[in-house]
Amino acid sequence: MVYLLQSFDPQPEVLESEDLHGAEVLLSSDSDIDLVLLDLKLHDSKGVYSLLKLRKQAPDTAIVVLSGEDNADVIHSCIDNGAMGYISKAATHDELLDAIKLIVAGGVYLPKDITASYSQAKRGIGKSNAELLASLSSRQREVLAYLLQGKPNKTISEKMNISQNTVKAHLSGIFKVLGAKNRTEAVYFAARAGVPLG
Image 1 (spheres, rainbow, N blue to C red):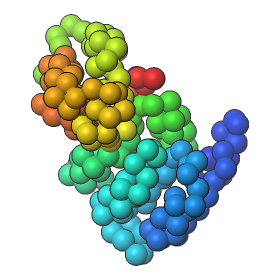
Image 2: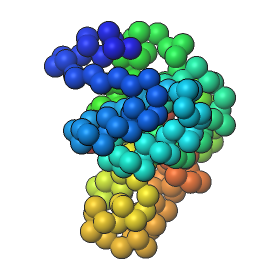
Image 3: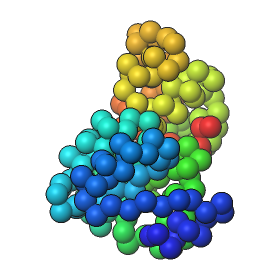
Image 4: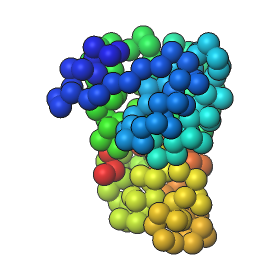
């Protein structure tokens, strides 16, 4: 993975940790970390608990789960808890590169088989994913961008200087346009669309 990241231009600084405690230390000592690639099977922590701990410590840092686990419930739980992507360890070199580029650009990446299982019935008839995203208002797109970063309503309201009720109204409008029932389905839609909102 380090070799892959070093192929980017400009080349990023890569910090490594073998356990959750070490990752927490790195995050507390360096506030400029833009992206965390998290293995769910660290020897001092298992599963989504690792993600929750790091999200709490670094709420503004993009966290992407890198795992050999392909259970849809696990993936769903990671997205529910604020991961900006879920990359399989079985992904090819090109898939890994594409996933990281998309996430760095503000998009969300999920395995193709997960997004493909997201029902076609949930989206507008006759409209492409990009057209549906483009039909959102600028404020809805801003709310959706924060949603993709795993931000809770309270944080979105503070960052946009609007009430939490207004955030809920925007979310309701987003869900209606995208044919989503909740936050996770909206994230799945954006991942399937592969269109950054920045």
